[in-house]
View 1: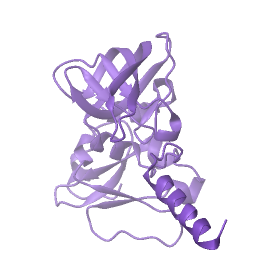
View 2: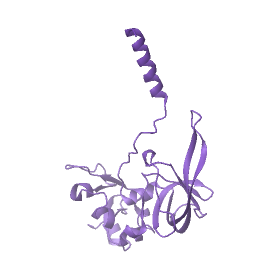
View 3: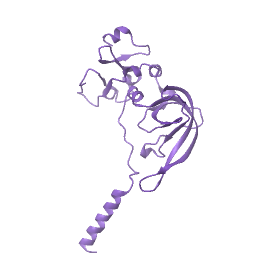
View 4: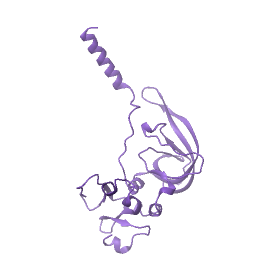
Length: 220
């Protein structure tokens, strides 16, 4: 085979490779504080999974069928979302494309945050905040009712390494990765970033509602 033919074959191969769907891409997510996950989500619920099956979801741009996993759930409580209870949760069929694997059988309870699809349905990915209910701290559980919502106008900035700074008064610096090498550290489990009456934001610790003195400027 001549050099020209080899070059043409290589070019065609690269062109074909570039047009194939990238199923093998790994799922990559940026860590978020539980409060930030709550604020970003359309729906936040406590639920059990009672059924699972693979369902079709149309075709991709190449005509290949798209499959999703459908989880039938029993909603225990809705912390954020539509008036109608969530009955089904959908996710991709593989973790490589951000699909979520949940235990079926109704024994394990989850906190599940994700995107609303309407008519009692929601969609989740590995980048959403989905954890077993019994792994949450008491503070986190109580914060779901109101306290996280109080800080949804604040910005939580993760510090990946020292030094790091906030750039505005409405930011809270999330230090868990630096201090504990974990995104489930002290600030994630016991703190919420709350907006004060002057528009600034600050960390508040504890399960009780913030005191008026804190909201009126008091060191946390």
